[in-house]
Length: 415
Ligand SMILES: Cc1cc2nc3c(=O)[nH]c(=O)nc-3n(C[C@H](O)[C@H](O)[C@H](O)COP(=O)(O)OP(=O)(O)OC[C@H]3O[C@@H](n4cnc5c(N)ncnc54)[C@H](O)[C@@H]3O)c2cc1C
Image 1 (cartoon, helix red, strand yellow):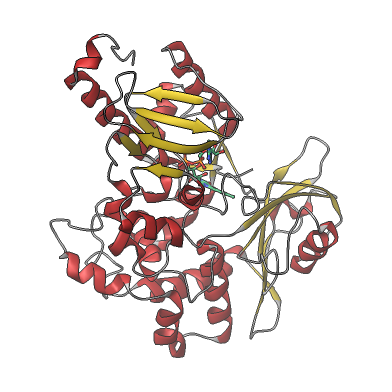
Image 2 (tube, helix red, strand yellow):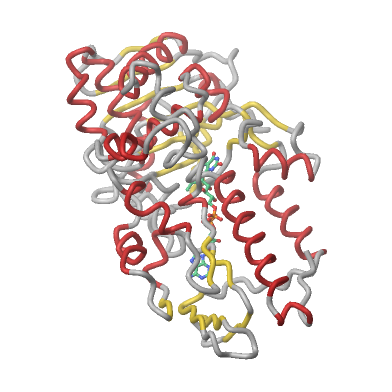
């Protein structure tokens, strides 16, 4: 439904996949060889047409390369080490912060005279799909970081980002990790929303008190919160969070994208990709054939919350798919992350200057409370890899703490 694609370039994910012997058990998303083996390009400012996948890739990557090439060296100078974007040995923080101020809209305005109308329409659509926001509130830096993570070459985009899936699915992967943790002593409660987290330094029975919506109380020596950025404002912290972290939380991230799966009649569209922008579902692509011989199409949309709530407006969902390409939709499957009260948005994408101002603060601990979320990871922010990165860093910090404190003698951590 949500996080899907994997690559061996996600270091933390690869480690876990190897642990559970899932690293070779992959399937490929897009397949050639079916009837509609082309890309339908229908973007603002240019007539709609079908082109080959190669030509569509060339139009997109030529515009994207120009867009991110802020240093004349495909971001190698400004972002040589994408897992340490701020304060690395190669680039001064001030240089990065200067670029971090720029919005995608401002960057497009700088380069649009170099683009054809079709390239401009395609680039604008791609950016809004990637960021899940508007051009004005999406940070150019996030695109630069992404390009650097793609090893500074847009030719790697498909291979690293949208090609490989786990045959058994992400849920099976999460389940393996969960079962392993239970084996090592994890106790758990589901459907138990946390409403407050208090660090009560003087308490002897575990200094952190976690209160849940049904007035349950949990106590522990350390808490690692994995509550997402756009949800943290609903949780009460005591002592209060720093004004800077609270400001970051109040602003949140700007990704409010849509992802909808459609099963459509016939297998032909399994080899098709397309873009229709503007559109509630601005991009669709073939993602295999079901056992019944129907094509599976994955549709992505940008921030369309004002006029589109897919779970309440099925007719708009069907119309949006049909605007991409004629198709007979048999069924749709999706989850709306934007109306999900425990997500309030898609994978985190930041506004201009957000990283410079808040990344360090979001990663800091707050007394005995540690914060792990993919939303503020060092490298692959807004991905499963980033979530494991932050979880691993917080876990080791908590374990070290416990070994150093008196309480640890009675409560040896089991992991
Ligand atoms: C549509 C979509 C497509 C994506 N595609 C990819 C992809 O292809 N590859 C990839 O690597 N990543 C992808 N991602 C991103 C990836 O899924 C996330 O970055 C990752 O899941 C973040 O993990 P996390 O543990 O930080 O947060 P989450 O996975 O969001 O986990 C946080 C948990 O906290 C719970 N929670 C929230 N509030 C409370 C509360 N108050 N009390 C108790 N529990 C609470 C939530 O229910 C949730 O279970 C995608 C995301 C979306 C939405």
